[in-house]
Image (cartoon, rainbow, N blue to C red; front, top):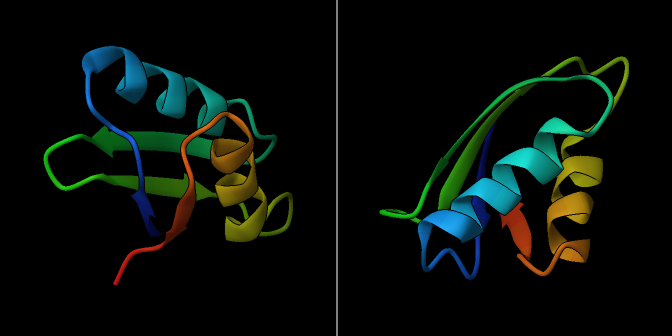
Length: 68
Protein backbone atom coordinates (compact mmCIF):
# COMPACT_ATOMS: atom_id res chain seq x y z
CA UNK A 1 0.00 0.00 0.00
CA UNK A 2 1.31 3.45 -0.85
CA UNK A 3 1.28 6.38 1.54
CA UNK A 4 2.02 10.04 0.89
CA UNK A 5 4.51 11.31 3.46
CA UNK A 6 5.21 14.97 4.20
CA UNK A 7 8.60 16.38 5.18
CA UNK A 8 10.98 14.05 3.33
CA UNK A 9 13.78 16.52 2.67
CA UNK A 10 16.93 14.49 3.28
CA UNK A 11 18.29 10.96 3.68
CA UNK A 12 17.86 11.21 7.46
CA UNK A 13 14.15 11.91 7.02
CA UNK A 14 13.81 8.87 4.77
CA UNK A 15 15.66 6.75 7.33
CA UNK A 16 13.49 7.90 10.24
CA UNK A 17 10.24 7.22 8.36
CA UNK A 18 11.45 3.81 7.15
CA UNK A 19 12.56 2.73 10.63
CA UNK A 20 9.43 4.12 12.30
CA UNK A 21 7.09 2.30 9.93
CA UNK A 22 9.16 -0.90 10.05
CA UNK A 23 8.89 -0.93 13.86
CA UNK A 24 5.10 -1.33 13.68
CA UNK A 25 4.24 -4.96 14.46
CA UNK A 26 3.06 -6.68 11.30
CA UNK A 27 5.02 -4.57 8.81
CA UNK A 28 7.00 -6.81 6.46
CA UNK A 29 8.76 -4.18 4.33
CA UNK A 30 8.94 -0.43 3.76
CA UNK A 31 10.33 1.47 0.77
CA UNK A 32 10.48 5.25 1.26
CA UNK A 33 11.07 7.70 -1.60
CA UNK A 34 11.95 11.35 -1.11
CA UNK A 35 11.52 11.86 -4.87
CA UNK A 36 7.74 11.51 -4.74
CA UNK A 37 7.28 11.88 -0.97
CA UNK A 38 5.88 8.40 -0.55
CA UNK A 39 6.26 5.14 1.30
CA UNK A 40 5.25 1.75 -0.04
CA UNK A 41 4.43 -0.60 2.80
CA UNK A 42 3.79 -4.35 2.81
CA UNK A 43 2.07 -5.49 5.98
CA UNK A 44 -0.04 -8.22 7.55
CA UNK A 45 -3.54 -6.77 7.86
CA UNK A 46 -4.33 -9.23 10.63
CA UNK A 47 -1.64 -7.60 12.82
CA UNK A 48 -1.85 -3.91 11.86
CA UNK A 49 -3.58 -1.42 9.60
CA UNK A 50 -2.54 1.29 7.19
CA UNK A 51 -4.03 3.78 9.67
CA UNK A 52 -1.71 2.53 12.44
CA UNK A 53 1.32 2.77 10.15
CA UNK A 54 0.37 6.29 9.05
CA UNK A 55 -0.18 7.27 12.68
CA UNK A 56 3.31 6.06 13.65
CA UNK A 57 4.86 8.18 10.90
CA UNK A 58 2.74 11.20 11.82
CA UNK A 59 3.70 10.89 15.50
CA UNK A 60 7.37 10.82 14.44
CA UNK A 61 6.86 14.20 12.75
CA UNK A 62 6.19 13.04 9.18
CA UNK A 63 2.44 13.21 8.47
CA UNK A 64 1.29 10.31 6.29
CA UNK A 65 -1.95 9.58 4.46
CA UNK A 66 -3.12 7.38 1.59
CA UNK A 67 -1.35 8.28 -1.64
CA UNK A 68 -3.62 9.77 -4.31
